[in-house]
Length: 352
Image (tube, rainbow, N blue to C red):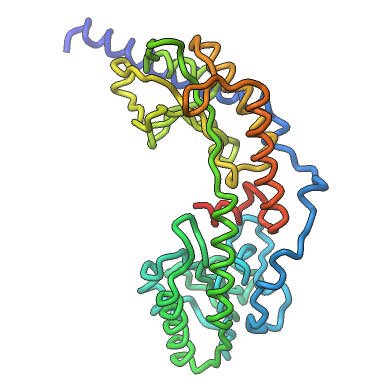
């Protein structure tokens, strides 16, 4: 390789590194702009509100493990804190003597056959804490909680698969010669169907279109530059995402027609418009984030010499945006009344 080629290669590498650092700095700067929204830890009266709307649907015959907090762990991010009769078919097992997770071999072998997420937790004999189990968890456990998630974005659990889950755990109980009191399958299906209906009502994505005037097209390279200046980075799904400090999407910006952007074709791409999206159930404080999305959309539109429009290319004025905001507020209120906080770990499970 000649000195000229080496020199050009070095310059190219430096440019790539510089662009990456600049994009990271821009994203960090934009998050700092709305820092209180992403890092606020104070309690909100609205988020503490409760409702009895779903109390009648709770499964009342969950087996008694002898510990009122048996589904809880000291780790707030642990799935063991989330297993609940409201969202999972939870089977509790108390063996006569402590056992390792090897006893769950029949469940491990079929855990991908039930159509929904299977989560297993064990109470560690040494620490007394509940922890998530995997097939090679070789500690000893005095109790197990095994949950099949009732609902996700694909719908509610299939009754046949729920019964299969039940049967697998019945076999586990027989192998270790321990009686297991199972929750009612009928009640679980009622809960699954009711929860699925509720989730379908609030499962909304709110979009604002960014449309240039006349027949003008937007250049992919220009879109990329504007997006990165505002802290959005191109992700594997072909959209630009603004991420919070936990790496979760707050907003996404994509081609209005759904065609994904790709790094190697940005300079050749021309698009008629963009859509910035807010996945309402998956973000904390959706109304607050909607307000921020409007600000961001206007800034991007100004940079691209475009305007905000609905799906019919009709300009979005203050009145129309206020109406959309009311819809977001209604969804947020409904989720809180249903005791599923938007953007919470439980919501992220249900709306995955």
